[in-house]
Image (cartoon, rainbow, N blue to C red; front, side):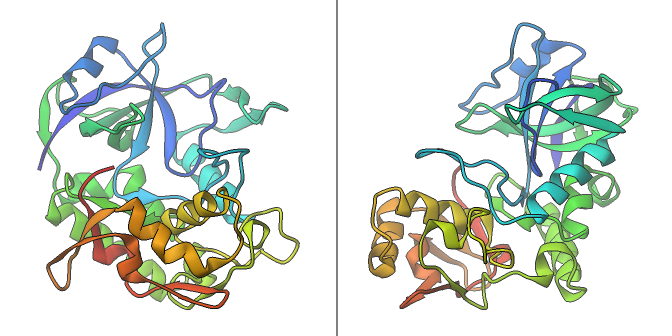
Amino acid sequence: MAMLLIKGSYEIVETQPDGDTIAFRPDKPEEWDYVCGPYRVKRNGTGRGRLRLEGIDALETHFGRTGSEVAQPAPLPATAREELLSWVGFTSVVWGADGKVASTTPASVPGFVLTRGADPDNRCIAFAGRGSHPAASGTHVFVDSALLQSTLNYHLISEGLVYPLYYRSLFHGLRNELTVAAQQAKAARKGVWDVDKTLLGATVTGLDSITDAGPESEDMILWPKLFRRLVEYFSLGDPDLSGFRDYLDQEADNFLVVPTGQLTTGLDEVVEVSGTTVKMTRPPEDLVFMQD
């Protein structure tokens, strides 16, 4: 799979990185304009933009699309974020009271990204690498198994610190590699897979039962996309789950169920609700979404 190579550095002061997003500044900021697709990568005056790591979904450290920010139960969301920052090359990160990074050691870390597009939030969807790459920045390179396995994305999924989350823009060969890594981590009960309730079923009695605000929510770990849908549902003001599947139908996520080849609309097709129990009937790696 050919992807655009952009060389630059990770710089995160005054940002809020998490387990699947981080700020990046190209050596040549104009190369952001080479990213194809309908969405442009937004950047500041220095050229710094945001990356959303391809193929993975990390537990939420701060999600607030529909209201005040909430986080999934500690400590795993922070563990993924810390591993991301350490792998990239930051040896020390000081956080400010506002939840943003106040300072880092070193101030920036060289790296590169491999991308084929941006998302509706104007983040570059990318595989992230550290150090340098032998090809010229701004050119397209072929991403094979060896290059994929050298990326941050692959590292995080192989350590069980993130879940799979696939979109159709990701070539199936790379997707399959990530799936194998995720399944191996799951078999070894690494990271999230030691406590994951996505397929087993989670007892959901309201927002506090799935966030770090709940005193007994430590092991209430769900696929982040399902978590986000629950948060959005609860923001409508009804803790009763009887309407959750109808809400998922209204959201109308379009996705392919890979094992069956079925193109489906609405996560209600793969989510069951029984009283206060919510679970998915398909693992995340079985689903390929048609759009962000």
